[in-house]
Amino acid sequence: MSKTIIIEKEGSIMTIRLNRPESFNALNPEMGDEMIAAVSSAYGDRSTRAVVITGNGKAFCAGGDIQFMMDWDGPKREALGMLTHKLHRLILDLRNLPKPIIVSINGVATGAGFSIAMACDYKIASTEAKFKQSYTSIGLSPDGGWTASVARQVGMAKASELLLLDPVMKAEEALRLGLINKLVSPDELMQETKELASQAVSRSQVGFAAGKALLNQSLGFGLAEQLETERNEIMKVCEAEDFQEGISAFLEKRAPNFTGTL
Image (cartoon, rainbow, N blue to C red; front, side, top):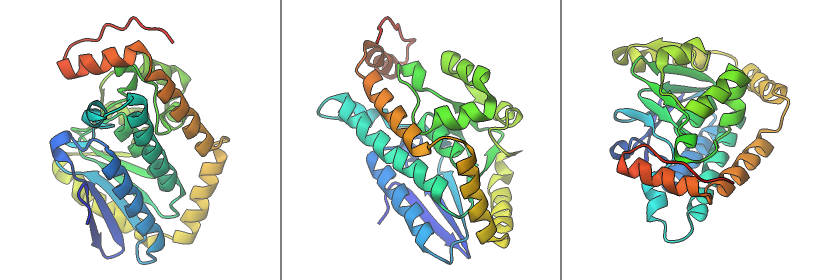
C-alpha cells in the first residue's frame, strides 16, 4: 500500500498525489519507488488514458529530501546517488509513457520537483505556484533533466541566469517563459485540471503516443545519456566543500558562504 503517494482512478484518468505534506512533498527513496510503480501501472493499464500528477498540501514538490541525506549513515554521495537514480528512472518513465501526463502544480516546485514538472506533457499551475531550481543555492548542479528541459525552453541566457542567481520565479513569469501552459486561481486548479484531463482522454491515444515519441526524438540528444551525465556531475559536486556549506546554511536558515572549488 502506498504511503508517500495517493493514487485515485476516476474513469480513464489516473491521479497521482504526492503525499508528504509535512515535508512539502520532498522526494525520498520510498516516494521515488512508489512514483515509478504508479507510472508503470498506468503504462500497463489499458483503461488509463491520461495521468494527472499533483501534490497534497501547500507544495507540489520541494525537491530532494534534505533530511534523508542528513540522516544517511554513510557518505552523502551514496544518499544523493540513490535519490538521483530513482529520480532519473522516474523522469525517463514519464517521458516514455505513451499517454498524456498533466501536471497540476498547486504550490512550490523546486529542485527535483521543478524537474518532475518539466518532464510532464501539459503543465497547469495555480497563481500561488512558485519555481526555483535550488541546486546551485546549496552547492550542487542540476539533475532530473533540468539542464535539458529548461534550457531548451527558455534559452541558454535565461537558463544560465537561473543557475547563477537561482531566483524564486512566480507562476506568471513561468507562464511568460513558456515553462507552463496555463495559469488559474487556486480555487479553480483542480476543476480546470479535470477538464483538461477529460479533453486528453477524448483524443487519439495512438496519435498522441507516436507524436510524443517523435517530440522526444526531435530534441536531438539522448535523454538517458543526459540524465546519466547529470547524475555523475551531481555526485562529484556533492563531495566539494560548497555542498557541505550549502546544506549547513539551508538547515540553519542563513546565507551560505561559498569558498570551495572543484
